[in-house]
Length: 73
Image: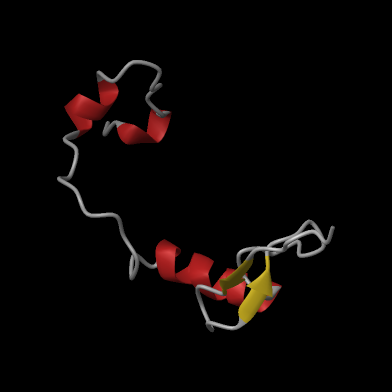
């Protein structure tokens, strides 16, 4: 019996990629495509829709520790 391999499209260039441990960049086809995607998120060209959080709401969330630079002097 042959093993079936999942194939997906690279989110950046749409090239067909095998989803296996042999591909260290999965779901991307290459490190280049992975870095392009990361840059899109970092520059906020990609985002997940939702309401912005008020800093007070964020500070009151369980498990969230405030950073020192979150406060103004």
